[in-house]
Figure 1 (cartoon, one colour):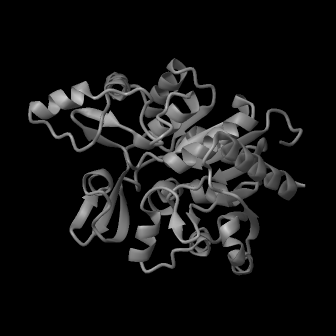
Figure 2 (figure 1 turned 60 degrees about the horizontal axis):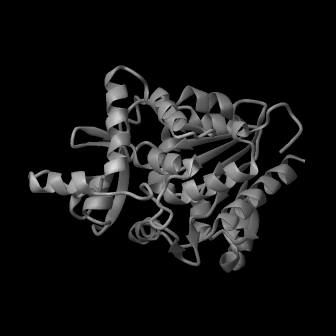
Length: 320
């Protein structure tokens, strides 16, 4: 990045897609120069434990202990506790492996002792040897509620229990009015050391929008002097991971990278699309955004690093 003292890069992340690009960034940047702020509106209580799916996916990925095949959870996981819980009549629709349970037990214990989610996340990351700073978007609880043809469902009920089958008509973030954005996150947005803000290829409606909906975040982004770059989660009319494409169709939006760009209109300086969507570049440019066309599908670690390097190069070029 630029030659300013201790330059900083800030990435907005949901789960799997955001974790992939965050990993790439962590490989091409010194750890002290990268901060990832993760969506916490997916968080919920289950079996008496506080579960933070996006925080954990990013934490496990950047710590090198994640299950690389499925993109979430831990490598070498076992499921003995879940099987025993099922035998005892507990709800087991949300898959919690034995090693993963330890994370949730420790988090719940620390939260019950009065520690903030930021403090707890820092402690967990340090225990796993993770050097990159990972921030929850807020220490206050926010819950995504999904309006569907079956009524309003909590996000994990919609996403995991119902496997995204109900048709979506809208979203609500319960608690967003009173939730405070993580102050470290807001401070970094306004820091002269900030060199780039990157919206990872995460679901724009349920991963990025909750972060943007926190009081002060959009104003801080508007005042931010660093380039704001978004990577499209939609490639050739499909979502690489998750229900974003299905949601867009049910919300009567075109399932295209251009529609995602329109969703971020007025916020993003540069929008990155996959080579398969190169034909959309002129229409996106007409929205007033710079467009970069590159390979955005991240199958290998080399893909993650290459995309991260490309995004950082765009930021340097725009700053110059």
